[in-house]
Image 1 (cartoon, rainbow, N blue to C red):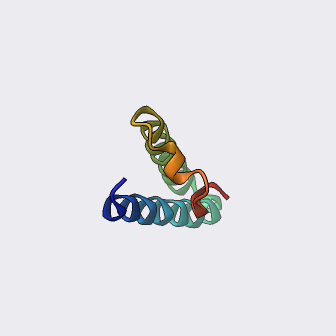
Image 2: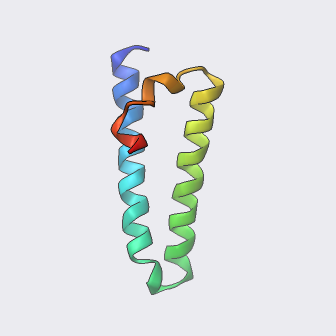
Length: 67
């Protein structure tokens, strides 16, 4: 995979993971924050599934995102 695309995907996923964690910390503030955290998790899950479909999963297996 081109490093530019790989870096883009990694940075995007890491940002989504950070936003998920923030939303989870704020989920006690109400349903909206809980829903926001759930939506982020859905997006992250979808992106990882698409990586599998496009056979680029191996690019991320040793990534910080899988920790």
